[in-house]
Image (cartoon, rainbow, N blue to C red; front, top):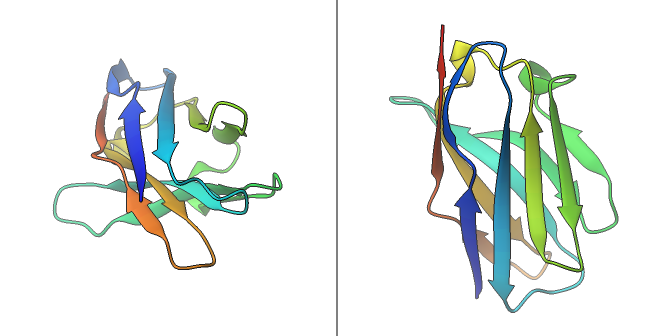
Length: 116
């Protein structure tokens, strides 16, 4: 199993920035995908961005050009730099780790609140 611990959430004004971090520990296979998902009250959990161990990345249309996902494989840490934040970005953000062998782990989530 893989344990994930997120940090970096908080309250920010619209137009501001935040950086989320996710530290992974446990059985971390070299070939994996890590991602950020978010869930607003009353809505489903949606993909924000994901990045493979080889460096490819995929973003939701709503965050393209504003958010940047990155990872430090040596430190098993995932990041999400969020710029030009909007009130609609308000949600609980979850870190995810998955492999082609079927391993799929979630963090506990970190709240991001953007005030208008």
